[in-house]
Amino acid sequence: MSMYDRFVDNDYAEVLTALGNIFNPTVPISDKVSDIDIVSEYLGSVGSDSAVDGTDLFLTCMHSLVDSGSKVVRSSRDAVSIALKIKDLYPAAAESAEKVLVAPVSTVDSERGFSTHTLIKTCLRSVMTVGRLDKLLRFSLDSRTVDEFPFGKAFKQWASVKSRRVLLLCLFHSATILGHGYLLDV
Image (cartoon, rainbow, N blue to C red; front, side, top):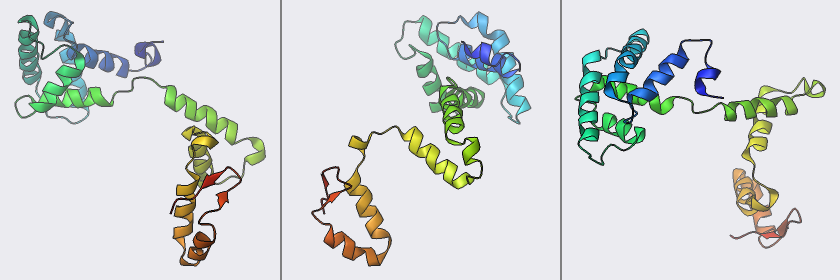
């Protein structure tokens, strides 16, 4: 499923597509006229003072580099990087580049989070506090296995929280933790 399909019910799909096209060096500059208008209108709606002329000039410079065979601009990432480096000359292009960098590539992570939330907070756990749910979600989404967990480091941090635990740290200096065979390194 494309980004356009995911955001088809609102105007953001059009803005995301236009932002992607503006910084794509393979899209001819003549095809970017409507994209510039869409992005300028969007930037104006979110309170930006950017001008359309600045984006036009930036795109003219970028495409002159591409047309001359320069290897400075080979991808959208290169174009975004250049726009950010020369933001004093082309503030509208730099602001558009910033929007490209924060645009969602996919919704997989958020969908995974909601699925995990549904698995953790069941009807049997309906009185769970938000804090506990947050901690359980973090544990679940961390995805480290038991073998990868740094038990020694975790124990040291736990032992350092209260001064009375210093005695425990000394007692367990060379003991194993939870029977997993991890030795503490002090």
